[in-house]
Picture (cartoon, rainbow, N blue to C red):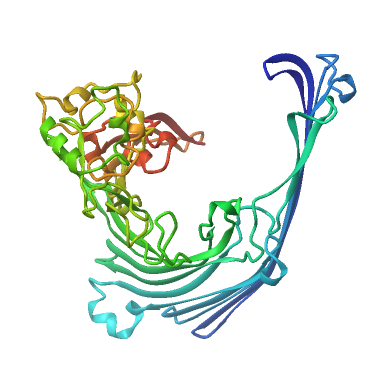
Length: 570
């Protein structure tokens, strides 16, 4: 509940406001398990069910003219009721699950499982879904034929799996349209009472059902030299069926947002490789342990089903690679005013270079140092054509915004009470197009009087004395119109390597005391440094932050964090 003073429509007055919440949830889980060995055979069985019920309600009441600042009651207000709303939501899920495990002599492994789930978020005709999984493993290193090489190749396991998983997290709790009542703030029919009206929600598909993820996996776990060297390899294909996304784009005369539907399928192919080395030895009579582990993974996702026969680029289309960036090609900067004038004589680039033509005369024309957009389709007009895959105008696929080749490197060392842990993490390939709101990148091209200007910005801008500069001639505020179109010249390579964490500790040698068993001093540093090609043109922007969709795509870099501490065990 809340009561106090308010400010609305330019007037300050007393009001009383009360917000009441009610949340009620029940979760029930039950299962039975059975486990038995028969000689070299081992069987385990588990079966159960789970039920989840949730309901919430929120009532908000606000009335002006509070008679007291200290007594918070609704009858202490005598003015206009300015808000009276109620919001309710509820859902239920019920699921049954089972699993059977079998292994023979620890060499042949099999697991079969399944779930049968129902959700109130879907219509009765599509409420239930069955999601089976099966996995098998073969420990080859336990076979008799492996004995001759077990001295140096001591562990080998092959894994195969197929699994399905259901997702019921649709955009709302209900599969029906809703109607809400609202009050107009400035319309009356009698001069006193404000008009109320009812508003229907955007259409909701009545055929919503489970989104299903199907994963196929092939894996290898290997160990060499008494497991000092370990290798793990996973190859996978992940199919997302009935993906919940926007349906086909409808004409504007439809009058509402196109409803979300189970409208698409996509396929992801990828791999993950992990290699590690761990050993311990004696140095000066004392034990020393150390280890290093590196990993590399990559994936690529393609749309395999979507109802977009014309392949509009504003929607998904079959064969589309998720994250692809369509943009224009720029053939450098004009070397002279004459070159720019000759280009403008034969090419209309107003659709992509409006910022130039909106400048004050005599600067409202192409000049030396302006970007030269390339006419790739030979139409003498720089535009997006029909905005389809078959007719993209002068746009082409210039990059991809999804990260590729994700890698990490971790090392640890301990000796004579000292321990050190270091963790590096990075991305091998990722493209990012700074949007027009990114002040840290566009600086004066975005605002006339920016509050932040890098020290080397002048060196990067075109001038007669600096014709080979990266940024074009300085024209204020043209980022909104000329650079809000993706292009290959200012597309950024966001690959990076980050020193994610360093931890250094020392454990005191404590003897002959019962009060303290262990005392360790440590220092830890987070996000200490990073290396990226982006630093050449925009050192103030963190590449990892830029590609996660932060505010303005480039604000608030990851902060460096330093921690000093003591661990005591009594």
